[in-house]
Amino acid sequence: MTDRQKKLRIIQFSLLLLGSLIIFYTYSNKSKNLESEIIPKETQEKIKKQIAKENNDSDVFYNIEYSGLDLAGNRYILKSKEAFSKKENQEVVNMKFVEAIFYFKDDTILKVTSDRGLYNNKSLDMNFYGNVKSFYEGSELFAEKAEYSNEKSFLIISENVKIKDVKGSMVADKLYFDIKKKKLNIASFEDSKINANVNLK
Image (cartoon, rainbow, N blue to C red; front, side):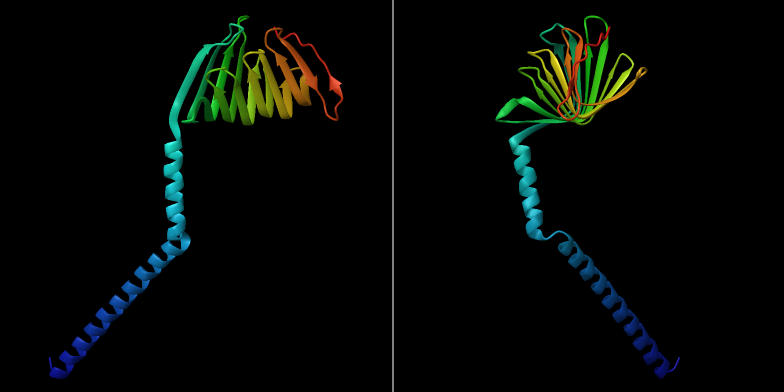
């Protein structure tokens, strides 16, 4: 190999090495810039502080289950995949992915599911929000909100209420379900009310 060929090989190798270094530094700097542009450091710090604050302000639970008797003597089970309660008000539990089952004394069962819920572990009141579904004696009910009052033994279902039953289907503004008397009052649209007593046995 002549001196000229050696010099050419050295120059080629140097150029290859220099090109590789340029490509490496160019792309590594771009990825760093992209990371900083997607979430600025200030925003990252705010998010971290917010998460830390939320964790300090509340207790988080997973796969929880409450069970007991309501004032009418009916047994219930309340489940949630995720829940939290604020440290300053621990009797109110915020829940996600909720399922409640009521076992009535006449051996009938009411099942309620929803995306979110609130449970007061002192008064035993329950609220269900978002994609509320209820199943009772072959009937299916769909709504956006349901409120159960333990003291009054009442269940109020509202917002886009739809009922499917073997006898047909129905749409209403609100349903008032008296658990003690097993009666259902139905409120229709435009403030015209229909009161119906339905024997649910």
